[in-house]
Length: 240
Image (cartoon, rainbow, N blue to C red; front, side, top):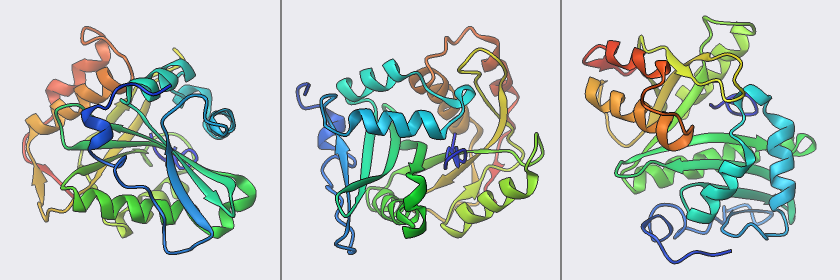
């Protein structure tokens, strides 16, 4: 759920995830003052600070519960990245590589308020996009729909920003973000970034993606009513 901050808003044995995407790439951008690295232990000295930034940045309806994040880090189903500026915590990002899929959800990206002017968020996004393309993966963004709720202009600017980075919007798809706090769902759009020049994507691919997001990331049961709209997705979805 990018664009609310951006959501835009112990070591277990080696797994496919750890030896695969991202964990084999420690991140050291060309700016020597900035460093990115993943947390792989809950006893990491900056874990609590990272969680505090997450809770401060994103409103409760869009927050994945902290125990889910902790469990995901331990089982390596969740990737929690930290960004540092001059060794000070400046950024957090939470990623979900979906199982048996090339899709990776960029779920949350937040920067420390007094360090936003160094543009560390943009640097992380650019590195991540380059890596996704190198690995032939597809990055997924959940972005608030400008036709619903307040702040239409701000939402449109966010979408335009992602498109400048190479993201493509799934046309005519109103993605229903679940009510994680039990209150109300949120209308959003899905955007993807990959290394292809495709102008459309098949219905069955997106149906599978949405089901995996609901089940693997948001812990929903397939019998819940929120799944019903998935069957109404039309074929040959345009990427714009």
